[in-house]
Length: 335
Ligand code: WQD
View 1 (spheres, rainbow, N blue to C red):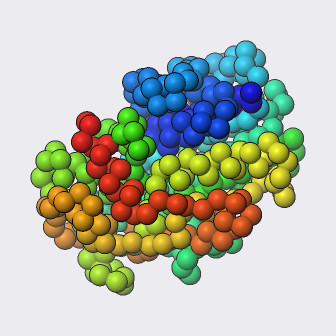
View 2 (view 1 turned 180 degrees about the horizontal axis):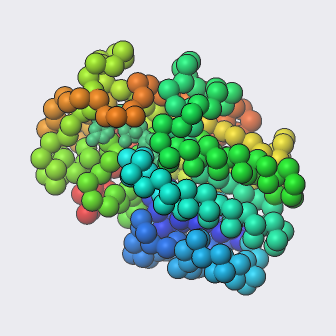
View 3 (view 1 turned 90 degrees about the horizontal axis):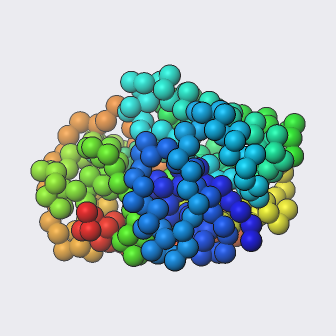
């Protein structure tokens, strides 16, 4: 049974990926410092798959602890989620973001190289494209100057990995996520934002649940179908499955080069108002919202060209926006 290390495996995307890995028969080891997750997620994963992942409460900034882990555990691959990911916070605390997102990536790659672990999947983001000149966005779209230190850590992270694959036996795939939303069908795991949600969907579901008074829609004067910004909202389970397929590509030596990049989105763009209409339709809830000024740093529109992921990776998103939003609501109802 192949053993896979999942860093940040108790987080939103990490936990859904652990479930899919276990469903595919992998043995999973999780490293998570609980800075943006809770230990209860470990039992929730176990209750879904009836298999308890091994869990290590390690902070990847602790180089000695990372060295110790790799000395004591032989893994066949690493899926790396652990990182700080709040765009706004990264503007206020750039050094914390560079230390946590870049420093830990370097430690991880150093130990992988030293211990001959050669398969690496990196959690990247469509944020590296900034506002792309052309839509849908292909993997060849120019990587633009980052709009935030968070986005910069993804851009720099990809470069670090690419350079490392050139001088080591490490093969890597960077998955550039569009907007992950929704929750597992069991409603046992989902998005757990700490404090006031920065992202749209958790704010929508918390408003519908009466936790927030009303949703502010940031900007209604964008050059889009209805003036509100457009994004590619992908169900987190579809996203999780893409990681398994990418990992298997490396484990089976199917990769064409030592560093590959794939856009992981639905290929469809939806505006904020379209998301609200869909949410109200599938849940029967009326959403309280108001139109306000644009949010600093937001782009007008982004949605993926998924041709390469579909043809080369053999992966395609299956869930619709309606299904993803309903799953997010069912999850919110359990909180
Ligand atoms: C989506 C749309 C907002 C909240 C960011 C990161 C990206 C990834 C996903 C980590 C935008 C609008 C939002 C609200 C709103 N993060 N909105 N009212 O900004 O596209 O992407 O999160 O990997 O890297 O950049 O996602 O959910 O914050 O916003 O109107 O209360 O919803 O303006 O148009 P975003 P988001």
